[in-house]
Image (cartoon, rainbow, N blue to C red):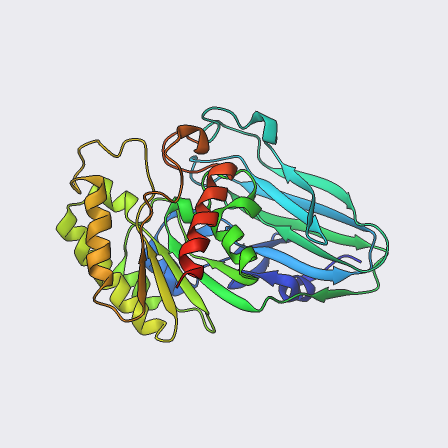
Length: 331
């Protein structure tokens, strides 16, 4: 059974639009209104997008096409799970090669295909898309299948943030903090994180995901490197005010920036942790906002960062999610 556009749409989470371009299935996680106020090459990347379904087919044949439109990251992986167990990945970087600063090296992109044995009988299948590149599906075939039935999750979590929320520098997209958190809470993930992003009041104004159960916001590290604290405060206030209006019945968790190796460097935004204190004070003015310190979410060890300084690797994101969950479940 080769899946068509309607079947693809029915089993996909995290995409606001799915289209066919040049014979390939293309996925977007941003609305046009959101894209108009973001203006970032990472817009086309597939962070948080995944497929989940039940089938009686015994083999999955997946052909993908990958593109790097920023020249910032080119590693990628599609993770394929069967009944909750990682069956394998389509990737251009092996786990054992993720040593030192692997994040910014150049890796092969283009067309990749792989076959996955699913086994007999009914099973659940999950395909997690890359966060680090633009990914398209050329063909998705389930051999000997009489049905492919969508699987839905109970909750929905919306994430806003920068490259760390997008997923840099996890190799496996299933191991980013956002994806791990959604899995732990049995929630569909809507990931609006985007590399290089800072607090953007216009995005807060135009962005709204229906039926969201909670919202995660994690900006500040890029703001600190680019603008003064008064400007950061103004931008954060505008974004959070607009966001609260669009999600009046949701808890909005605001995470201050996590540790970064250059945190003692003099920057336009002042001392690094001044951003955290400002956000904590700001959140106290809002009814639905819950502040979370990011300082100790990931241990201060460069070995837990794919670029050895700023973006967590798979292991680092494990600490991020575990510690973040403690804060959320404690509220």
